[in-house]
Image 1 (cartoon, helix red, strand yellow):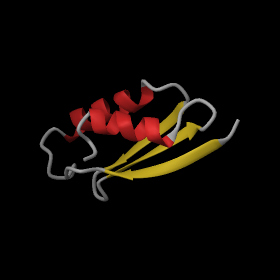
Image 2 (tube, rainbow, N blue to C red):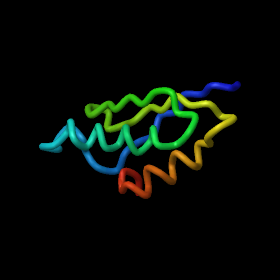
Image 3 (spheres, rainbow, N blue to C red):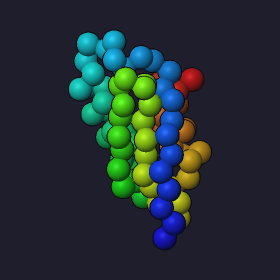
Image 4 (cartoon, one colour):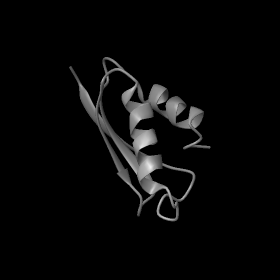
Length: 74
């Protein structure tokens, strides 16, 4: 089992979002819906999300696609 942590830069500023908690929860839930994701950390100051995942179950491309589908990435 190969674990990996990867940081993704988001397209919209989270720190200026009035519904930060709601957006962060939605983002976290979306990513956790993929199998193999162990942890999701949202950083509104840096406007990033860091995902800890098992490379044997989910790929970086799948995570990126999930972020794009949710309009978190361009």
